[in-house]
Image (cartoon, rainbow, N blue to C red; front, side, top):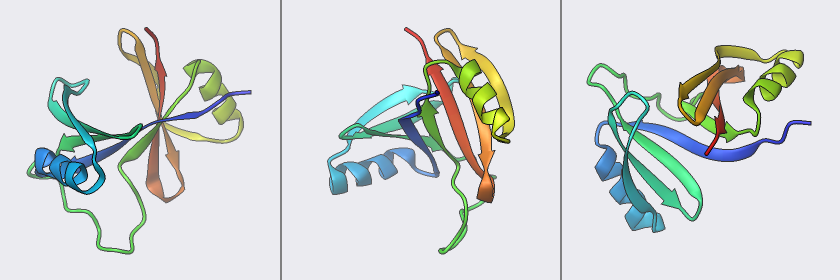
Length: 127
């Protein structure tokens, strides 16, 4: 049986650092600047173990829908073995928008498309 655990939530913002400062002020989030897989800067926050990545939105990125709405950029679930997890999900009828692949040394990812066009990132992190 595959075990899934929480990894992260990923947001896009026109002002990532300002967004992070809000979470810091409101919820005591620790702010950490990092680099995304594509080399672009990103602001990460940690709210007592709840990790949120806040990426810079491009100027052409449309605003999100007004409430109520359906959808979310994506959230991540960590697995011990991505290939086993992918096979298990495919057997259950899951639709993959990105097949498992090595993103960089120590990190394999895939994306599953859930109802409502919600993207779920599966991550296998190795030391």
